[in-house]
Image 1 (cartoon, rainbow, N blue to C red):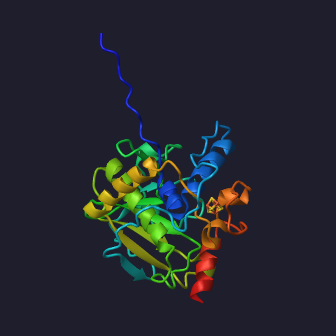
Image 2: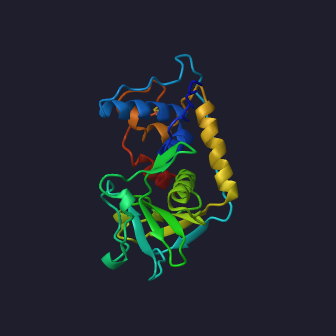
Length: 266
Ligand code: SF4
């Protein structure tokens, strides 16, 4: 009788991991450790060696940036669009659909919110998934505290692009149709809607190829170096817990990044 050879599972990653790695690979390592501790699990040992040399920039390849569609104002929805998925763990999501157009997929209710792609070893939760009138599916990520003003100057938007592409892949896998784009909705709850806007991040062959490449890049990275910089460290959660000895700034809160960009624009 032949023995079964176990197949190695790829390291589990989330869209949020990609965003974190894009800022600072060491932050991703420490975030995994922190979350494991909070859940009472055995924390993974960070790969980063003690004699690591900090980097000036994350090694992650930047996502393709072609044909991003930027729109001012409220999100444009058709009367035929329906809400088919909502991350129940998010409390501040906008109400975009009347109840008669909410038809949540029962696979993702009752605490089973994760969209999983076993082939890529990717799992995560978009804020919303919209089924459009023509039958396609589109993920939506809501940024309640991000001003839409200055969209083009804000390099932080690249992080949103990374997240949108990864969520498009999850929606493609789970709902069976490739989204043409992912939506980032900038809600500006602090400004009473004065700076609302939304962006369509295209999702095609180039974006899917990029995603495969960066997932492999992250998994093959045996160092996961720190990238100390004020814009990273001031909003780095593990830094807030005193876990990083490379920090270039004191932790001031998760929303520092937005404020930092606003002052740079001002
Ligand atoms: S404090 Fe800075 S260098 Fe350290 S993990 Fe966080 S972002 Fe990286």
